[in-house]
Structure formats: C-alpha cells, structure tokens
Image (cartoon, rainbow, N blue to C red; front, side, top):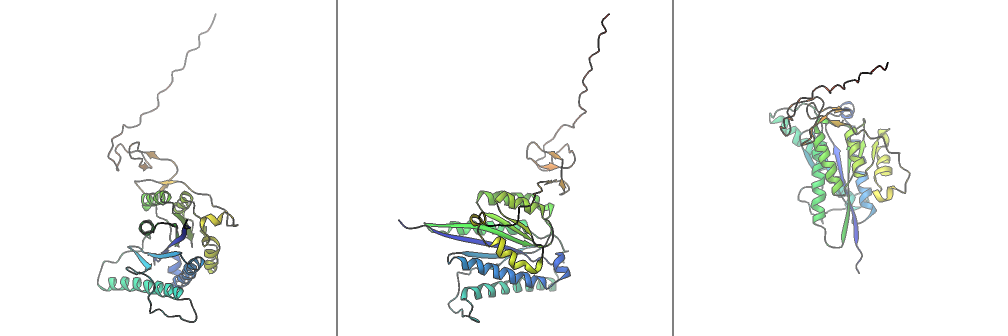
Length: 299
C-alpha cells in the first residue's frame, strides 16, 4: 500500500497598517518585521520538502497576497542562486519584498490620483483571516488522493482588535474550527481579547512579544512547531481568555447584556425591537410582589 503524503500549509497574515502605534513611532520597524517573517517562512519550508506557505498583507482598506504572487505556478527556471542561498529561499524573499513594494506604490498612486484620503483606522484583520481560510479551502480541494494537509494561520499584528468586527471574527473563528485550521496570534504591542478567543476556539497559541528585538526568536520558538508537536515542548503558559461579547448597538465589550431570543444578537440596553431581525418584544415590567402571610395570633 502506498504511504500517505503529509504536508503542512502555513498562512501568515502580516498587518501593514500605517496607523499602528509601532509604525507611527518607528517607521523602520516594518522592515525588521518583514525580515523576521521571511526567515520564519523559509524555516517552515525547510522542515519538509512538501511544506507550503503564503503571506497576506492586511491594510486599512484591503488585503493582498505578498506570496505567492497572483497566478504564480512555482519557481521559475530562470531563478539563480544568490550568495549560495537555496533558490526557493531567494524566491520567497524576492517575492515578499516586491509584493510589499507593490502595495506601497499602489497606495501612493491612489493618493496622487486624488482619491479620498482614508483616515487611519482599524486593520481589516477579520477580512484577511477570511481570505486566508478561502485560500486554505481551495488548496485542500486541489489535493491529490493519498495526500493530507495540516493547515494553520498566523497573525502578526501591532494593532488593537476592533469590537466593530466582532461578528466577522466569530464567523471566522468557528469556520476555522469546523475546517480544523489552527489560528495563532503574535501580538507586537497590546493585549487582543477577541483574537485570544480565536486562538482558544481553534486550539492555537497566543503570544504578546515582550521584546520586539527578539521577534524572530519568538516566531521560531513558539510558532514554528506544528500543533501536534507543541504538546511535547515547553512553551509559554496559556493566557486567561476574556470571553466578553461585543454589543451590536455600540460595538463595545460588555459583561452583562440583553440577548435576542430569535437571532441571539447582544445589546447593552433593552430595546423593544431587535435591530438585527426586527422582532418585537414586550417591555419588561416590575417583578410581581409576593404577598406576606399574616400571622394569626392564638389566644
């Protein structure tokens, strides 16, 4: 009997939003982060010849593939070694850098063409994760018989998670759980409560990097091993997950709220009409008072 071929797919979602506090204070940090991601992706490809990888850039208004390029079938025959580096590693590095340059040029051309300037806002991480899951699903459908692919997604971001994307996040997390796709998160700046929920739901790892200078070391130590191997390693202890939900009216995390019994929408204040499914509810009245029994005096 032929032996089953097992491969691993890694999809990295890199947050390139210029509104991140890290990039506002240190613009050169994006180059350092890209160097670490390139080394991390090449290390993943080096583990097994059949391993595959993809890198997506998440922006304020769009999500683009940095690697592989759209329509790319593989490494071209004209690729040559540079400084003794393996051809595949050279291809990954060149494609990622050209992809980031293409993204920056496109943004500059959009501004020069007189397009409306978008104020610095939240990164579309939920949309980028949805694109990553679609890419994983497409590759799984293209697998030949006798092949098995273990897929995972790694988010590298310095932005804060937005409660306005709460429903999109939840849809992505439970879709990833159904598809058996592990989600890992590497936070560069602050605690990300919603993404912590995604890691816990899908069985992934969440790490807030304590020192940005050691980003590559943390990527290789924590996120390079595949999920089945992580059980045998000594990794950072899991964080306490904040499972608060975001209300549908103000998009803020709440501890106690009102839930629609029809569509399960969450609201911080009572509303007689659900704004999601338009179900009408009766106004909650005061609780009925219990009549106290009078004590009968015995002569």
